[in-house]
Length: 207
Ligand SMILES: Cc1cc2nc3c(=O)[nH]c(=O)nc-3n(C[C@H](O)[C@H](O)[C@H](O)COP(=O)(O)O)c2cc1C
Image (cartoon, rainbow, N blue to C red; front, side, top):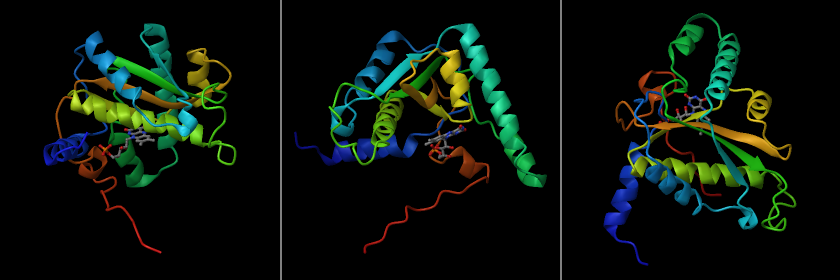
């Protein structure tokens, strides 16, 4: 299939308007839209075609509450590493939409997948986790194309999340994701807008 300039522009729009979302509406996401997102992850690349991502949709209120408590503890700990005005700035940031987001996805990497037969990861075993990240980014773009916002929450203790969700021993947590309808759209990252860290161009050189 030869893609047209319209496709290129459509992709450009998705890339431009994809944001890490922390401010969600509480409206539910229907099963059909979630299925579309799952199907998008099916299209992601992976080392040796191992497809090591494992997704747990977290709906149980007790488990969600435990995840939120873990985030708050980890966030307080992170804040304590800063001092003065930087600490005040950090504390003023909203770094997760866990309470409002209707959909929580814990995305793990299976470190002993049968699929792929080890191809491509003998010297760089981290390729499995990188493959999971590729699937997560595929999900992120597919969600945005479906007008669903997604936020990546990394301020968590992975061992705690692993325990709360009773994940298998061969899995490690790669991401905890919040999905839902964004309260607003923006073409500029929140951390840039809040003057925490401005966007800079990709560093690229020819050698
Ligand atoms: C690996 C990874 C982990 C992240 N963890 C968090 C997080 O814990 N909390 C948060 O608010 N944003 C998190 N983000 C979002 C980044 O802050 C965001 O991508 C960046 O500021 C650029 O904004 P944009 O995604 O809207 O372009 C994470 C993003 C990535 C790729």
